[in-house]
Image (cartoon, rainbow, N blue to C red; front, side, top):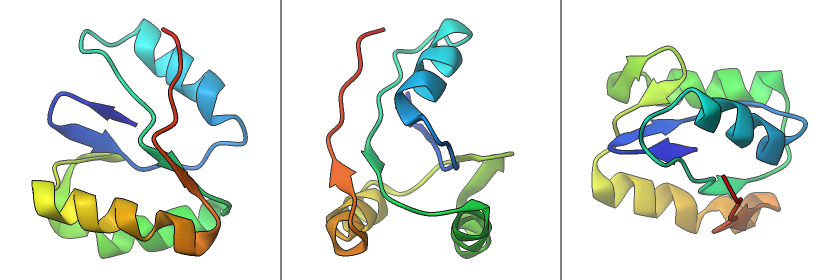
Length: 87
């Protein structure tokens, strides 16, 4: 989930619902960038690998090229990119 210049990396069984909950308390418009199968263990692994870019909690400030590179690999893991949700 991305809003302004921060990206949230997190685990959810229902990403669209999670986006809606986060949007209710957020000023900037949020969007679901991608989703792929995983678990809490997957989330922890990604958080460890992305630690240098951590802003706070599950929110990260990635360099633009890095985010593009990460999204390019989502389909390799059985995921989808460019999900949209009304909010």
